[in-house]
Image (cartoon, rainbow over all chains, first blue to last red; front, side):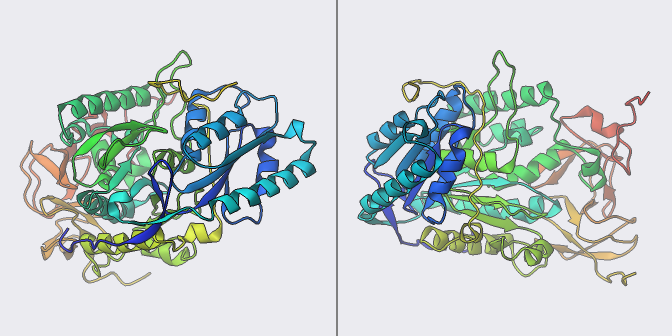
Amino acid sequence: MRRPMSEPMWSGYLRQDGRKGIRNLILVVYTVQCAQFVAHEVAKDEPDAHVIGFPGCYDNEYAIRLMLALARHPNIGAVLAIGLGCEYTQPARIAEVVRGAGRPAESFFIQERGGTTSSVALGKQILNDLRESIASVPRVPMGWSDLTVGCECGGSDGTSGLVGNPTVGRFFDSLVDHGGTAIFEETVEMIGLRDVLLNRSANPTVRETLEKTYDKAERYCRSVRQYSISPGNFAGGLTTIEEKSLGAFAKSGTRPIQGVIRVAERPPHAGLWLLDSVPDETFMQFGYTNPNDTEGIMDLISAGSQIVLFVTGRGSVIGSPIAPLIKITGNTKTFNKMRDDIDFNAGTVLEGADTLDQAAFSLSRLVAQVAGGERSKPEALGHREYFVMYKHQDTPSLEEGCRA
Amino acid sequence: MSTPKIHPECFQIETIDNVATLLQDAESGVAIDIRGTKQKTVAVAEDIKAGHKVALCPIPEGTFIVKYGFPMGAATRDIAQGEWVHLHNCRSLHDEGSSSLDLKSGARNETPYV
């Protein structure tokens, strides 16, 4: 980057496991759809309480791993897990794992506490106690090397590939050069880029992993008949699948890829990482990959992203729990229409007012401000969309399961 | 009807790209400004719609079409500077089917609808 990114210092929250958060939130987790209402009532009018939950009653290791990763996210100070009482996923086991990570956590079953009214009252009381216990979490200085940033795009238009994603790519290059961690995903949107992807490998082992990840994504696309280029794309000016994929891939920047992580896995060291969210092949075949933007954002947060960048061309009004979402567009018209929702306009590059490098530098300042406590637009509006679904991904270890 | 711009613009992402993307429709013969890098203008050799690509230099048959700094396809014939680059003169290196698509709609020509 021509203009070097300055080293900001902001104050974060030090967790007992050594990780640093940019927020000090309480996470309310429900373990089945039946407990969803109570969980949301407990968190209602409590700005520091965010809700996530898994609607399924039956066992799913993937969903449990995802919730456990979110519950131990560095931006989370404490957890309250609420269940109905007859589902597979056990709130007490979630609380236990969170306490194991050195953070206060409580849990209860609604069936054991009366009904809605008494459960909500109990939840509110626990929330107050948890808030008190995390008020004294030590504050520590943080910089780029303490930061993990994820990126995803959705509601794309022609400007996303031209300037939205390339701006993020240049910011990611700087973040990585300053010792930070960057995560990108959407492997099903890399079809046609096998060689381009493999040539970004940090070493031969990574190359092998990337090869497997790419080949799985391609098998997945064939198997579920998901082709990511359509007649409308061609009519709009895209000529090849490579061209479309390059537009999405541009958000990864140019630095070597350190490896592939899977949902709920943290990058083992700093640098640029690819998150594989594509389901593994099972007896039920693949199942679906990311059914919507929010699911991809949850994946990036589960990998420890303290901030997630979201590039949109047509516009979007989503946000996220746990980690603030910063919304970026390359379309000035969209930015002007949605100023309440969109944090950053890279459309200035298309107008000739900025270069991609200048836009990336401005973006880095915004990221530093949000890391320092300034609320992103979706965060300030109260957007807390979340999505946890049934999926299958093979896991190297089952020791973190929380079934009864 | 709005008055057509005297200088429509196109956007080149990386300096090594040999194509740029039109930001507005451009008529044949018009010199268009190139944004994003240091080059000045390119004269378009035919009408090109916004969102479509223009060749910034001559691209010989069989060589790569470069956008985002990477090959996005190969020229299926010699392409002159200022020409429209699309399905009729660029093929995917990955998906063989795309060269047979309808030039305007992008729809598949070989799929039977019976």
